[in-house]
Length: 380
Image (cartoon, rainbow, N blue to C red; front, side, top):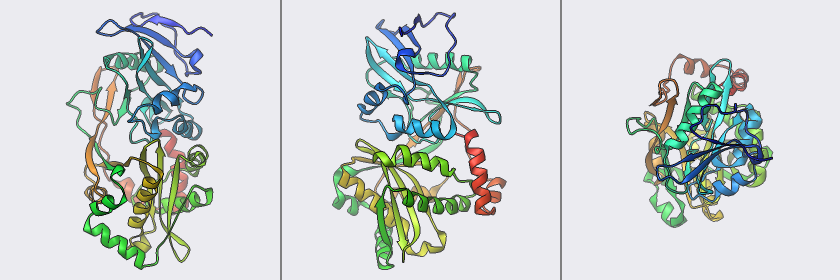
């Protein structure tokens, strides 16, 4: 099928539906400020075989840029992918993963990406960012988006948009010996205590280990006053990531009883600590520290170069201290929303604890689990 090519400034464009294979993607020709011919494609990474090759070739690509993660989101929530690729002189200048979240309760909007920490644009060559912003603004009007949100990328939004979160990265290239020497004295004490308590560690990718993690996840989310993600979400993580060796579970146990666990995801040289969970009744064993150290060790042994600890709210000082105690570097994470009606950028509203945290913190686990299954399709 021949791809449609239209002048970018033309107003009488064809309506955009859900993107399909590259042969059917929408392409619009534009010109940069340097007058180099440009095109913008809308792709579906779950069917377009070229997406992974392009995204993975960028040194800052993460698991969240992959088609495997896109399949997790689509299979779990039914979100529609609108992944953009900007071509300049026939070569890729930038790519941006985007998902349309459509809900009768929370409206329709686009996010890059839902439930993802680092999924901003990947830039290959110099280009005018306003080309993508113009394209996204047109899409927002055509699709009826309240806004589109770009996460972990400061190259599009103005400086006035303040960071809502921080991220922490750990350079794994320095090796285990220097990494061990870089942790805080409190971490070293906790590691010794966990080993002296008889905490046993297992690393794997099988479904049974992920189920054990999920049981701990239910307890942890209730302790934090939040509903848990559905088992279907983790089932798709197992199917599309763990089975493809794009992640693993670290499980800590006392006398064969799981008391702490974490899920690490990785692609190429970059990894992310995506989920952590524990049974608070066994907190004195400090198993979380041993889980983290085993995850770091396994990543180093596999050749990973960088570990990201995920996003952290600015006001969560305890979690920030924990992540910094591993020798990581803290950096701001900017989440920027563009309102197409007002044509302005703004920061997302900060989340804070309220009455609902108290409610979720006291509900029975099965009830919390049901609420999470019902509400997460409407969230991002």
